Image 1 (cartoon, rainbow, N blue to C red):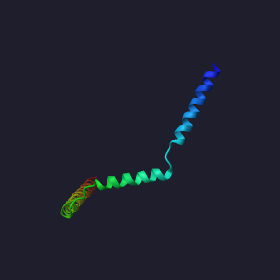
Image 2 (image 1 turned 30 degrees about the vertical axis):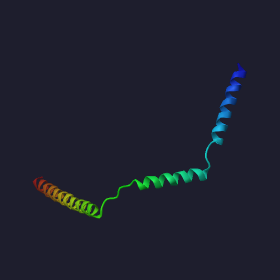
Image 3 (image 1 turned 90 degrees about the vertical axis):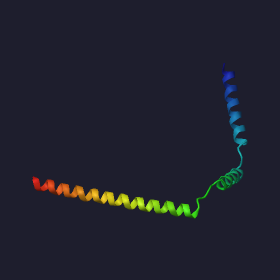
Image 4 (image 1 turned 135 degrees about the vertical axis):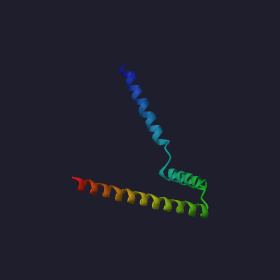
Amino acid sequence: MENKNDNAVETKTAKSVKAKSNKPSFKTRIAKLWRDFKSEFKKIVWSSKRNTFNNTVLVIVSMIVVAVVIALLDLGFAKLIAWLGKLI
C-alpha cells in the first residue's frame, strides 16, 4: 500500500514540475498582454464631439436642478423645525 501512495506523490510532484516548466516567461506574458491591450483598444467606439458636448450639458443641468431641489428642501425643513420650535 505504501508503494501506491509513494507513486501517487511522485506523479503529482512530476506533474507540478512539468506545469511549472511549461509556463511562459515573464517577457512572453507581458508581450501577450500588450498585444491583447492594443487589440481591445482598437475596438473602442469614441463618441463624437457634439454627442460629448450634449451629454456634458445634460449632466450640468441635471446637477443644477438637483442642487436647487435639495436647497429648497433644506430651506423648507429648516423653516418647519423653526416653526415647531416656536410651538413648544
